[in-house]
Each structure stands twice: as C-alpha cells, then as structure tokens.
Length: 396
Image 1 (tube, rainbow, N blue to C red):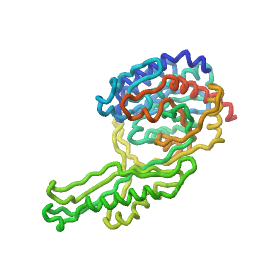
Image 2: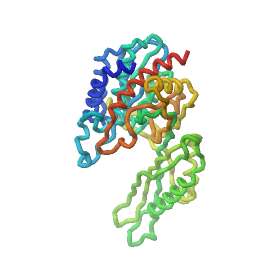
Image 3: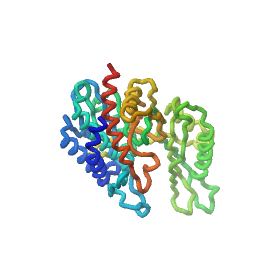
Image 4: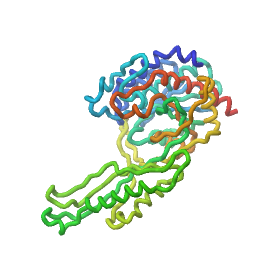
C-alpha cells in the first residue's frame, strides 16, 4: 500500500498546491469546492455530490461499512501580507515543503484524503467498505456546523470519521469543547463633566472582567487527558452618545473551553452567578452563528461545541494504531488536540466515533509563512487508505 501510494506523491503535492492557490476564507469556498469536485471526478470516484450548504462528498466503494475523512475547505485570512516571505496563496513547493495559507490547516489534508480514496479504489479494498471524502465549509468560524448539517439534514451516519486536522504525525484521541458567550451591560449616559449623573457601563463591565479572570484561574474540574477548561475575554465593545459622554452600554465576548465533565449549562451558570454580573444586572447569552455559506444557505447555530474523546481500546483506535505500525514499523504516539474541530458535532453531539490524524503542525497554522511537510502529506494518504483495511478486518 505504501509503495502504491508513493506513485501518486507528486500528483498529491501538486493538488495541494492548487488548492492553496485558491483563496477560500469562510463563506467563499466555492472555488476550492469546484476543484475538489473536479479532481474526484477525474480520479474516477464512484459518486461525487455537493449539498445545499456547499459541502463536497466523494466516495469509492459500495460496502456497508462507511468510513469518512473530514477536511474543511475554508481558511483564515492572510493578515498583514508584508509579514509573509512569499505570497500567502503561492502554493510554492521545495524539496520538503508546500507553502501558503491552508497548507497545514488544512488543504494538504484534503489532497491526502482524495488520493487515499484513489488508492483504496486501485487496490480494490471496496468490497466491504465505502470510503468517503467530506470537504466541508465554515469550520473556522463555527466548527461542527457542516457536520450537523450532514448528519441531521443529509442523513450521513458513518461507522467512524477521520478528522484530518494537523496532528504532526501523532494520533489524536480527544479535544476540549468550546462555547462562545456574550455578556451585555446597560448603563445610563450623562455628560462626561458630570459622571455622577450617569451609570457607566464600562466600569460595571470592568468588575465583571476582573472576576472572569479570577474564575479562569480557579476552575476546578480537571480531566486526566485534557486538563482543565479555560476562559478568555476575546472582544469588548462599548457605546456612548459621544466621547464626552458616559457609556450607556458595554459588551464582551468570552471564549470558554470545556474540559471533559464540564457542560455548557454548567459553564453558563458559573458566569451568571458571579457577584459582579448580578450587581450589574448583566445578561449572559450564547452567541448564535448566522453567516451564510457560499451557496447562500443561512444557518442558525448556537455556539456550543461539546468535548469528545475516544478510548484507547476502541476498535477505531486499535485499527488506527495497527495501520500506523504496519506502514511505518513503529508504534505511534497518542495525543489530544488543544484546538477545536468538527469532531464536536460528530462525536461530541452525535456519538459517532472520531479519531484525529493529519498532516501539518499547530505552530504553522494561522500564522505568516504557513507550511506543511511533504512527508506528512504522503504519510496521511497512506494512513487513510490503510485504516480502511485494518478497520474492515477488526470490525468483523
């Protein structure tokens, strides 16, 4: 299998470069979706579809066992391009690397998934399994959104899903959950020369921010693998009639990371019960994501994303470890992800087994001069194909 996959190595790298060259920030994935669709059709996939949200699915095989690989097509923006040593969307290659926005997060992974499908088909591993590439939308702003649609609207129900997010050649068995909260405080405006006549919403919010910092330092629930949760005040805005007025409104956003054992309701009530929140009569609500996909479909998703973990003795984990050992003649290292993925919907909400393995490193994501190692891109393609074989055997 490894030898056969290597015959596609340069085609695989070139396809990753093609994907990187197409700018595809969230909500603008159409160009990448078209490229992925065309490539799977050219490679002879049995079925290729694009749903109403814009997710692309391509499958090989007609077996009852359905194994999916997930990769999101959207990327974050390039930021200040003067900080890049080459064009963010160059897709440049050298002997060891592919460069550009999305190289690690996660267009190279999509290329690995697609060519894994080709290998599965070439080696006729499709009698008992169906391998499906799922190139998804809008993961960066709202992870899990696309998979909630695939499961709840499209009826997709795989045996398990490979999350191809960057894992640096490690196998990820878990991630923390996440939620986005909004805290709003209303005050009373007054002329800045007579502040005692008003009620400054910023001052009330300052007390809340201080208590939130203390709460973060004193979170109690701790998981052996995932550690403690966390919270960060990630944005703050205020309003006043003018800069010479007392602010009558202030609002913050909180990114709350949930460890295993912390529910969204628990985290929400923690904040609602803070003395400063009660004193300010602040409202604490979940943020709702409502940005349209590139097809125009407008979702409405409360931003709660449950944690997930898969056990070391689960058949999916055992099959993944076995595939790695057979391919590379050594035992893999098992890890957990510090960041969030589409696994929040797949396993966190819907209890469909998930395991993580993909090319790239976290340190290269969302930064200038993003890159991915070619060796990891090729190894990922090998792994996805091999996992189909080991899982089909171990499931029996």
